[in-house]
Image (cartoon, rainbow, N blue to C red):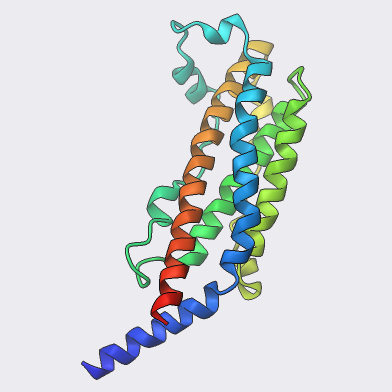
Length: 198
């Protein structure tokens, strides 16, 4: 029993050392998350056309055929059941990879859409990515997942395909950002709970 208790205390101590810097930096990240969630509908409205408002168009099949990439699933890797099951580095790395994906995809779409509102959204995503990467330990920065370019622009021959890709990308970004928001709360809750136990 005493051996298991010592191991548990060591795991708890190691987690506290790794995560001590998280609460301070997550506050800036959370404000950017809220800003992105507020800007997504604005950007979407600026590119929505009557074509996109039709419910009879096979958007989902088109999104699949265009190869619109999906971000990493955060609900699984960032849901802490306890301190041992939860891996902070994996969670932050998945957040980083998803933000890199949307930075790349929206960067390609920005050159093809008529609104300049995408530029502001991209700036917010870039700033949030920087905050998430800062939450990684200095020694863990090399393990941050690097997203490979999607090449989406080459699969969008016309304006309609661009609109469909932008529409679905923004919907996916909204869902990813909402999951990222929940994941931030999970991280803060776990680090706060660990601090109280210590």
